[in-house]
Image: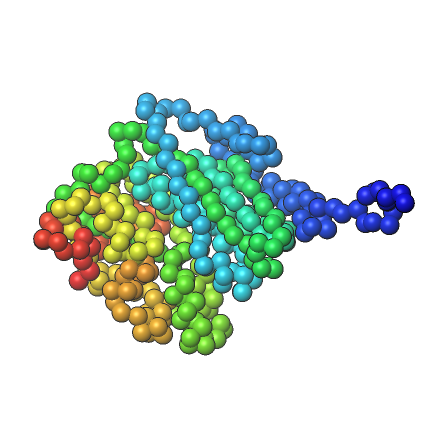
Length: 352
């Protein structure tokens, strides 16, 4: 008996689409995002979206340029974006988490790449995400020059995706900010956050679930949804401008670990940052979270930014001018504490 050929009409010819991957949808997404990426272009971009790799020339004018890189995701804030069908600002969070990190070393962000992975590609929601990424890049002054969209059937539940980002910046070697010049008596300035930014969302989701909170609830006159999904603030442009006008000794991006764990990352072992909790107002969202979850003060300071998204350390003589310059640039900024000698084995951040 003659064996039937695999190409016989009696057997369906399978395609990649039958397996769950739609190449046409991927091509459609690239077409949708190209205009957004184009708006982020800056000098130095040699080849961007569409090729196998992106090219970027180190800007002229540096004597000893040092490249600074950072990568991050958005964490479980994504779960709320899925549940509430809000995809247009989550890309700003993605950019902010990387560019704010490399900024703490004094680096100007140059370019950004993203990785978007899903089980089945929804072009509309993916385009919203990348539109947000492009908006974040514009805020940071960096170019969106590439990325990857991965459609992987069976890897993610329907309607869900994962995000990761990667930023590269540059700083003059002699201008790297590493905290080594910080001394007792230096002043700690705190720049206001937009909310929880991209940290503490597992606890936020736990509080919402346990308390059965109505999503239409108002907190401080604003919809709870809007407060919780407010995108991470990008501090790049105001702080780059500040660094050109006066010496900045150290910066800490207040992410996972809050004030207690992030400020010590820029301090020498023999120094402590003493922060006054009454130096700035606790935003309504954090008051609500603390009340609803019965969260202790120390836990609040370790999990959330509590209204301070970036810390800047300057000499006492420069503090007033730095504060004025940052306010002029549109930042909310407070003198939240000072640096002193560490006493024994005490914590390197003390909130009093």
